[in-house]
Image 1 (tube, rainbow, N blue to C red):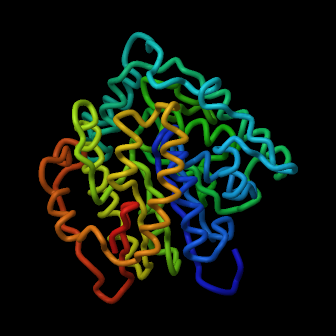
Image 2: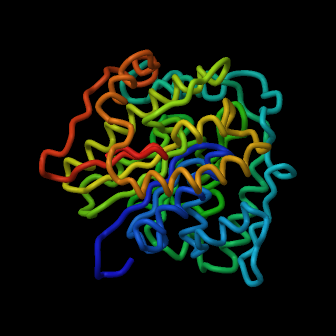
Length: 364
């Protein structure tokens, strides 16, 4: 947040248990490659699993501390991150949900205003209410915030935590100017409340669920803020793919659709004069991740792979995966028409901002 030097933003996307692990590896590589502490970014945006990372950064927890926690080797004096994926996590599969649809009001709203909400938001309204608890996640944020911050929010004033109003489909970046009041632990829990898996979180008499139902990154929130560079750590986005089989093939199709949305968001930010660098899992990472981003048994493998592949991608700098061809593949055989409307083309730098994409594997 220094007045000197480039004005940077950090965007941390959704991705479940394995997305958090992959992102810690990617952030470690980013800091080493670019030579700055991501906690010094002017704005930190987090969604779902990325909301946990954003909250920790906003409370002053370093990437090194997160890395040591993920590796199971905390150092003396490290803030206590009392969370264990095996013991505290919801597990690789959700518990049996409740009866009835999650949000009749959102379903009615989407029927009357079909273009006002995303297809995933509409789908979430029809899913049953989840029963898993986010108390362990809330507890982690509460414990860190209790030690590092005063008041209801993170010490870093521009920590934005994205959730969705479950009755209107409206995207709500808690912590941003004009957003509803919330405590940091409540906002993070709301952002992580995957429909049909976790129960919605009530804040100010409104129900909120995972912000990834609107966008897995919400990068476009940073358009027009006058930032020089935005770095996007996006565990659910890829620009190069593995040879997936079985259920993993369905995950990769969804991933292609999510990638298309991010590229459109990047274009909005780029058009406002901000350079965008995007980093997502590449083929080796995807092989480590498998088909289920909530499977804690793969966490260490995903972390170790990300540390290596993210560093390699950032070191190369140029487009090793031939972005133009990669985007042609993204155009084909996606769920884009079902998930988010008409395909739009991604264009390169027109002299305003520019875009760099890297798929741990990084594409520029």
